[in-house]
Amino acid sequence: MRSDVSFNTTRWTLVQQSRGDDTASQRALSELCAVYYAPVVAFIARSGFEDSRARDLAHDFFARLLASPQSLKPERGRGRFRSYLLGATKHFVSDTLDRERSLKRGGAAQVLHLTETGASLPEDTALSPDRAFDRQWALTVLERVVQCLAAEFAAAGKADQFALLKPWLTGDEGDATQAEMAQQLGMNEGALKVAIHRLRKRFRELIRAEIAHTVGSETEAREELAHLLAAM
Image (cartoon, rainbow, N blue to C red; front, side, top):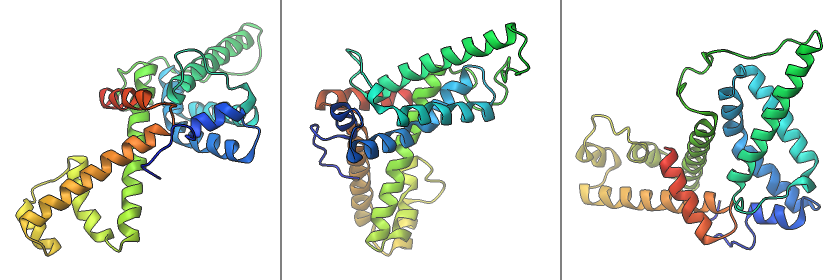
């Protein structure tokens, strides 16, 4: 993952420009779909489908998208992949519900896999499908960035240091003081504060880079970052 994103060659703009007609675009679309799998599952589940059915439908949705990338035609005001995909997911869910209701009215043997209360989702059950999508998107972005940071530290031979510093990113510092943490790392408190500051700075850079791959301009990247913070 790079922090020096060019808005002429982001994953999303690459897909838009070629409509998936070349290997690079297909790879970019596949990477985008991987990021958005969990948000799409969250939206479908909050729309009333049981968890297992939501996952099956998400697989179907992305399989169709990857098989027909030429169908990607963003509307005005939907230059962000998140916005485009949310709209596409809504249409997919609506069509699925219409089709299954039609089958039920026609006496088909197929049984609808719907829940009345959404009890299969133990967390955030009060969230609307849109809010569930955005929250899961934000969590996925943060998870990917943390994984990237972990890989960077591991490559530098500092995996143990990252494991100790990570709580200052996630807010799970626990009872350990900075003095105790510095002692574990073999540094003084001043050096620890600098290390935490640098970690957080790199964290912000990678969040921005991850988001930038799904938009087409600097302005959209700033707006998406604000949207991510609001979703959390």
